[in-house]
Amino acid sequence: MNREAPIFELKNVSQKFGSFESLTDINLQIGAGDRVALVGPSGAGKSTLIGLLNGTLLPSKGEVCVLGRNLAHLRPKLRRQLQRQIGTIYQQFHLVDNLRVIHNVNAGHLGKWSFFKAAVSLMWPLEIETAAKALTQVGIAEKLFERTDRLSGGQQQRVAIARVLVQNPAAILADEPISSLDPERSREIMDLLRQLSQGTGKTLVTSLHAIEFARSHYQRIIGLRQGRILFDTPPEKLTSTTIEQLYKT
Ligand SMILES: Nc1ncnc2c1ncn2[C@@H]1O[C@H](COP(=O)(O)OP(=O)(O)O)[C@@H](O)[C@H]1O
Ligand SMILES: [Mg+2]
Image (cartoon, rainbow, N blue to C red; front, side, top):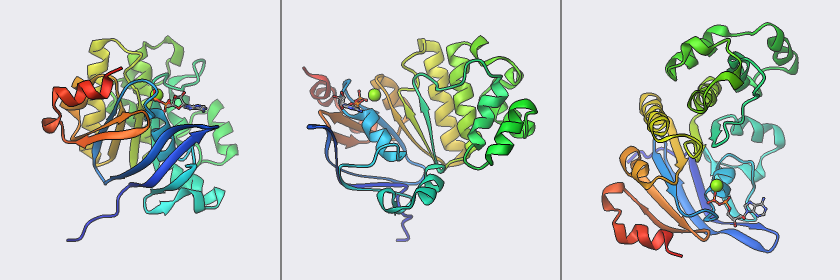
């Protein structure tokens, strides 16, 4: 069978912060187009794992390969090129509040644009069409020239998603993207991420507290507890007993 190389592969990965090990001996493959939910209690290691997948962290032990390349073995320039293939959105959106939406969306080009082009674009926005298209995809086309801090939380998360669409990565990571949002907005963002992943075939890895969204919107659920993988299973095989084990104190 002609299997595609995984987008992410972790082999015997451990991550230490000082003497504390936040991930222990993780083995994991995530393929093209997979939709994976990461669940587990606070401190389980979800954000650490996302940091390893997007290369903001390099493992203390073991190998992390992205698109078949070990990030730790690449020169900085090549590593940055590979990192551009991974787009990440965060709970706190990580937008520049006092800029217009278009500038935050255009930040998805950074890394591809020269410093000069990026600086010019702050005065005269470049690539308005690309930004407008991304905003249309996330359902807020009319906000292009609005100041970002005038938008609601749900709308700001949509801007962050539009920025990732402009970046056009192979995989999208989302670290608790709905933890700051109300239930209705949470559902909308979950629907949007699923729809974008299905529509583009991009891999999606999302850390979540809401186990119900993990079940309803993802094909694979990975449970992390105290830095280890407790289960890695399709939602229909996840039992309430297993969930209790995941969260038990
Ligand atoms: N930069 C860091 N320095 C020290 N400890 C850290 C750092 N990042 C995470 N940790 C610790 O690692 C553990 C896992 O954290 P994290 O990956 O943020 O968990 P989660 O996202 O599941 O809540 C926690 O105990 C946390 O305190
Ligand atoms: Mg976290």
